[in-house]
Image (cartoon, rainbow, N blue to C red):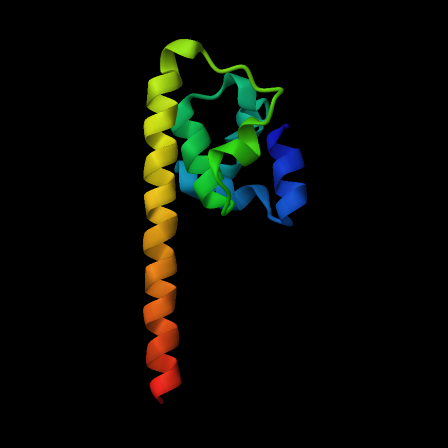
Length: 99
C-alpha cells in the first residue's frame, strides 16, 4: 500500500501525516513508498491516520527481519495505547451518563 492509498481509504489529507511527522507538507511525497520508511515512521503514520501498523504493512511491505522484535514491541505499545484510549472513552461516557 502507498501512502496515498492509505489516505484515500481513510478519507484524509496528506497534511495530517506531514504534521505528525513534523515535516513540510511539500516533502510528503518522499513518504509515498511506505517500503522505504522506517518502523518508527510507519508507527507515526499509522497513528496519525488512526490505524495500526498492520493496516499499512499488509503483505506487500517487506520489513527487514532484523527489526521484527522492534516491530513486535511497537505493536504491543500500539495495542496498549488503544486499550488506554478505550478506557478513557468509557470514563467519558460514564461521566456523560451521570449528567
